[in-house]
Image (cartoon, rainbow, N blue to C red; front, side, top):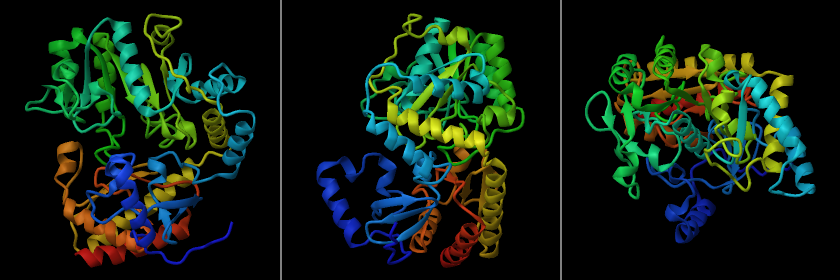
Length: 440
């Protein structure tokens, strides 16, 4: 592969600016997912030409160290040779069949063997994390015969109508639409709780437990920035859901196969009834999955009355990428090395922010981390919203100008991949020290 790098300044220049102008004429906002527009950090988005290992190259010729990792899937780094080879081989046999394949069975068996909640259960493949969460909630409602569901304020579980809700006042509130186009009646059975608040969950279950079909939670929140569970929080949710006959759903779209081989449920030793997967499970291809207890999954058509289908579910290319990625993880587990690299990065960022005299709080779980520009711990969405968003935007632009690609939002996590190394971490910390000093 020829290196055409001209610069490490990743800010959008002539070619990216031209492409963004063209995109805005034919794509809403010029992007196919909102946060890519860089609205919260200023400037315009650099357009990416290619990626390899821990790096991406922009259309403007800049080489960037990437900590977005396709928003999570690139655990092994970009364009891992074995994964690319597997996808190319599958593509040569046909892009999709809309029919059962041998590889699907092998893939499902491997996923079930790795994820604790699926060990004696079943899994259904879909095409995205949104499909996975939407389907799991439908299954929970069908299985329990109840209508109400509970999510945490600030948590994002995809763009299904029932999950696009905003909080009102009080510890547990009725959902109100969080997006235009979502009718109030659609979310009237969606209840919200503050994240990491075990007492609020206990009070809600005492009052309405017999009406609740499911509680869905990110065991490690990732869409308010990285927010670990408070000690005992997941255990309380597990005990409450068992007591009240509620289906406990872990949204492990981000954490699945990232914070441990079996995800956050393995790391924290709390097993939900259903698990939703995405990102790493597809190895960079559009793949999602949901699964868990056999008696619950047997509610899904064609075995049961809960209908869910998908033309491209389990498609050969996605299965090839996901299966190969998981086989590599099984063969050569990256987690000890990822833990060490991520700790080096998180500790280094905190030290350099303190040297610059900046208010800064870091959260990390394995190779998933966020630095918040604020004093004090960040335990929930309200805490995260107390960050200095202007300071983050300045930091983002400074880091991008030095060749470090971070998620363009304070409320997202950074991801370290197995392709990063100590030299890359050190280079990142050098850029951070300069960036912190520039905005202090």
